[in-house]
Length: 252
Image 1 (cartoon, rainbow, N blue to C red):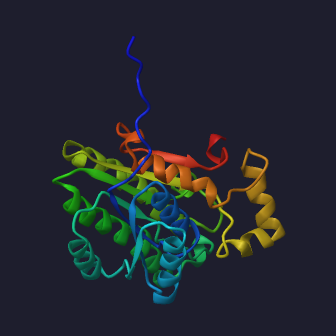
Image 2 (cartoon, rainbow, N blue to C red; image 1 turned 90 degrees about the horizontal axis):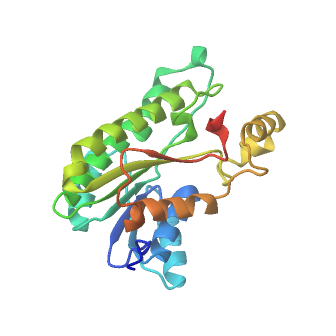
């Protein structure tokens, strides 16, 4: 009897670009991909944070380099993708939130959220697909559970993430014949320095804990296995879908 073998989760010899990769979830994704053997390019706006992230990963004996990049600058990320050469994995973790009641939404806040979360995400995926079309690859958008549900004071943020879910499905259909897979990871609230104010607010924390079915909130490590899975051959037949890392929030 010939037994089936589990496809490899290893990423040796592959190059990954992680935007928003200098801190929080993005840094966790960069570390996870590097631990799996990928050469990781960490891109973010802050030069000092990029340098620190690269130093930490390389000091751990892994492969990483840095790229100072504003993802809303489409010409800059077109140039960056061209300079990188062959690309196997894009993990777009760059994101922005500015919450308010819908009746109080300012146009400038709407534009900023959409510029980062949707416009930049769309054209990063397009640029990555151009870089991958002769070899295939995996495009991973760090979306949100709020791409599947609604939430108070989150009209603009939810709109941006629902749009990311829709474009991911369309891109997966279009680029599937090129063996380019496109998926999203949709985390619940994850404890990071940026999210700490939410957890420190008693009402917000109570709301979060009432929605998560597991007996704890999420940490960065909870996202790391998901990104390796979607980047690797272990998910070779997975495209156009969402991996919800939400502790059961969207289950009902």
